[in-house]
Image (cartoon, rainbow, N blue to C red; front, top):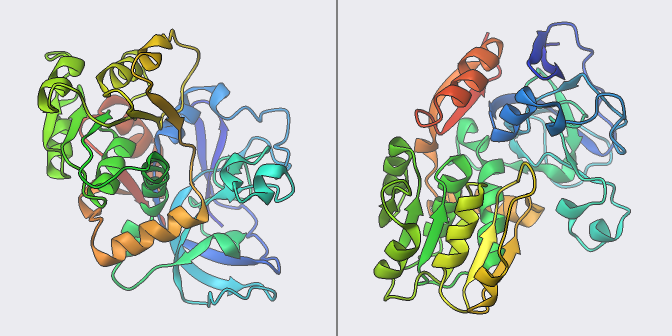
Length: 357
């Protein structure tokens, strides 16, 4: 079968003779339909530190480079393991939660599979991926898509679940004013999930003009260009001189987390959604004065996947405009990874039509 395989930084190959995976008793076998390209895929392509399993196998999958890519995907079930009892049938369209977890550590036993001691992702750390003709996944991580959700939108459930998890952890109340730092794919997904909970003012700070336009299209009530306006003073001006009750950092740079902390009102909450490349200077007094809280949100749980599918089904999230381009599997590097690397403000989400030939 075909599979897009990662052999190292700058070395991704479409291979045509990869063995087809065998469906185990607890799994479903899926023929991927659509797969999104994620910021993590860009980091993996550019740096060996993003996927550090060249010589040491992942503790759960036992795999090292090369690995099949693709962790944001939907597909059609073509085989069901003999012990699967969750109602999934051959022919069902599903969105896949690409969680790799041990099921044995304390976080897993407490239901925090996203905090597993050996946490990983299908499509990054082994067990195949969505950029292939077939992949087998644990049946509990395959979610049937209603007829109202097309398969290309089904590939967006994964990034939307990241955002939903962050918003759910924040304990946002209807009417709360909110600041979102960064309007990349995850920032825009956070905006979508915030709108589903009826916030007050929804302020977005983003340097790219095109992404500010997308933020307004998706529901931002005010947008700020941090290069032209002071984020902190503008937020306070917009929010009764106090600032928003909550801020989400989706930019992952030192200036963004600093602005988020300073802009948030006393007693407010800052939620970090970003994955950071390294240490940054950080002044805890920006939180201490005003007794502000800092939360972190990592990945998602099955409850987040279910909630996103329900929100897409009932229309409280409308994600169709997040897909700005569809490409084929043989053009992932040229028309996907390189396009997103060099033209960040042109596209939100590029998805791969995996079945197209």
